[in-house]
Amino acid sequence: MGSTASARNGTWRNWGGTVAARPVREVTPASVDELTAAVRRAAEDGLPVKPVGSGHSFTSIAATDGVLIRPHLLTGIRDIDRTGGTVTAEAGTPLKRLNVALAREGLSLTNMGDIMEQTVSGAISTGTHGTGRDSASIAAQIRGLELVTADGSVLTCSEKENPDVFAAARIGLGALGVVTAVTFAVEPVFLLTAREEPMPFDRVCAEFDQLHAENEHFEFYWFPHTGNTNTKRNNRSAGPERPVPQVKGWFEDEFLSNGVFQVANWVGRAAPGTIPAIARISSKALSARTYTDIPYKVFTSPRRVRFVEMEYAVPREALVETLRELKAMIDRSPLRVSFPVEVRTAPADDITLSTASGRDTAYIAVHMFKGTPYQGYFTAAERIFTAHEGRPHWGKIHTRDAGYFSRVYPRFEEFTALRDRLDPERRFRNDYLRRVLGT
Picture 1: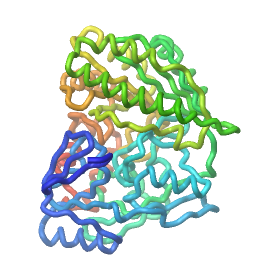
Picture 2 (picture 1 turned 60 degrees about the vertical axis):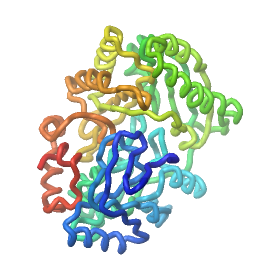
Picture 3 (picture 1 turned 90 degrees about the vertical axis):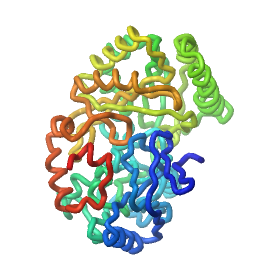
C-alpha cells in the first residue's frame, strides 16, 4: 500500500484503514483545464466530486461514491517570488517534495507538522499544524489560493482578492471547491536547534506556561500509565549545523520510535496487561538529545507504525486541567493505552473554521495502534475535550456534528453561507460534510 491511500478493485481506502469508498469513476487531471472539465462533466452526470490527497485523514472527509479526483499530476512549484517572499505550489504536491524543493532554493516554510506524506491541498484543507508560540498551522502561512468552484470557474483569492473566500477556503474541508494551487509565505532557510529531554508529567504541567513562553516551538509526549513525558523544544539557531548522526538517528528514530515501538504495540495488542510495564520501559528508553538542522529535518519525523488518532484543540489556558482529567480518567479505567499522548500549541488565527480560530490553542492528540479497539478510549477522551469546548481536528476521528460546531465556532454560519453561495447544489458533498456542516 505504500505510505499513501490505495485503490484496489475500484475501492479507495485511507492510510489508517478506517475508511473505504467505491467511487463511480476516478479522474487524474494533468492541468487546471482538465480539472474544470471533470467538475463540469460530474455536474452533467449529477455526481458529487471529491479530490483526495494521500488519504492521511482518519475521517471520511475525502470519501466519495461519485467522482474521485486524484491530484498527483498537479504537482511541483509553479512560481517563486523572492522579493515578495512567496512560493506557489500545485495542490497535489506532497509536503515532502515541497520541503525538499524549497530547501534546494534556500527557502523554507516557517512552521510545519510532524508528518510530510500529505499533499499541500489535503494538509491545508483539514487544518494540519505543527506546534508554535508564534506560528503553527500550515494554512495560516497561505498568502493566496486558486480554487475551482462548483460551476467549473477558477477563482483566485487572497487578502485583497475575494477576501471572504480567502478567510474560509484556507481550511475549506473540500466543501467550497477544489484547491488547485497554494501560495505560501516562505523565508530564507534557517537552522533550528532541537532539545529533546524527558521530564516528569507533573513538572511539565506546573511549568507549561513558562515552557510555552520561552520556546518558539514547544511540544511534549506523555506516556499513559506513567508519570513520564518526553519534551521537545525547537528554537532558531545561529548554527553550526549539527544533525543527528546517521547511526544514532537510525537507532532512535527508526529502531526505537518505529521498529521496537511496532513490536511493543504487537505485544500490547495481544496481551493488553503488559502495556503499563512496556510504557514504563519505553518512556525511559528515550534519552535527552540536542541537534541542529534545517527546519523540515527537525519538525518532521517518519511515522511507520500505523495508528488511528483523535485530536482536539482546547483553549490554551484550559490545557493543564484537560490533561490532568485525561490522566485521571485513564488511571481509574481498565484502558490500556500503548501510544503516547501528544501536546502542541498554536496562536490564534483568523481562518473561519481553523481549530485555532480566534483563540490561543493547545492540541491534545490521543492515538491507538491500528487494529486495537479504540472506541472506548476515544469516547471517554472526547467527553473530556468537549467539556472544555474542544474543537476536533477535521481529519481525525471525532463524533461531532453541525449543531456542536455552530456552538464552538463563532463564525460557523459565515462558512455555511459562503458554501451556499459557492456550491448551492452541493457538488462537493459527502456524508462527512453533511454531518459536520449540516444540510
